Image 1 (cartoon, rainbow, N blue to C red):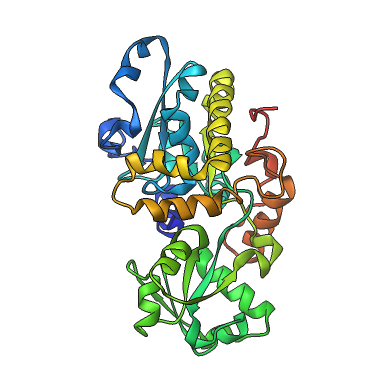
Image 2: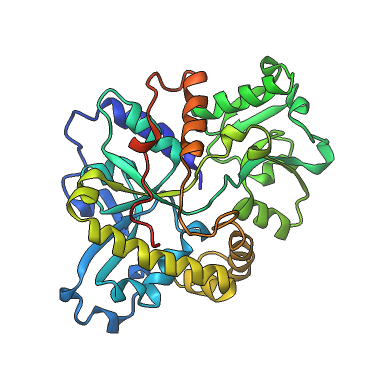
Length: 350
């Protein structure tokens, strides 16, 4: 979920995009397979030579953003579509770059990463093919007793984050919009900033994903004030996370893309209708997490996957255009990338 780390890696990768991808010569060196082969049972291995092998590279460690895919795998939805799907976590490398270079068939990424890639000097040939969550579910969190209830209250405080250019641009923009002085906010880079540090007075603010750290904080009895990002600027209600594919996959194997999304949609609809059971399936792979925490996170996300949408995975041109405009206005990119170059709804189930 900490997409900022991935974003920094992406920016570095894009400057080297014309160089050989050292470490991408062998798929086994690029990514590490999930230890349990993603919940597949031994019996499911029989006859897989008749199926199309598909590799999905996640954006981060396994979490409830990904549940629908694990459900589709466990319950045989992918097999029904003629697919033998392996879901793996990223190791060295960035998911969009790995997908663009054929190291995986599908990947989990973020709208901003695709836009960065398409806006680079040598555009990264990937497109979003589905939104896993319809709205941005992240925001700013602080300890409740510090009374930070608006962006204006950020003045004189310490923010701990991952140090990406977009992170600073977003915070600067929302503070300026609120009439706050960005220069009065101290920003520090920390790979270990969590809600625990908010109570220890190490820092005052963090960027948080409501359905993960928000749930965990509540379970730990940590009282937080939370300011949802999408409420501050409609341009910041961008898609995160998304499913992506390379242009080569889209052009050469459209039926595989359709089959993958048909099964994936079925998995996410199951997770929406059966959050507790879906969390149990995810727990088979993500066993280091407390099952009850996964259930609570899943119950929250069950209301978010298709929020304000009658169809799963669909994306709107205005959402892509709005955030691209923000990136341009903030100097994060210098090229106005048309929305239709970044995403397609063509392969979603009708």
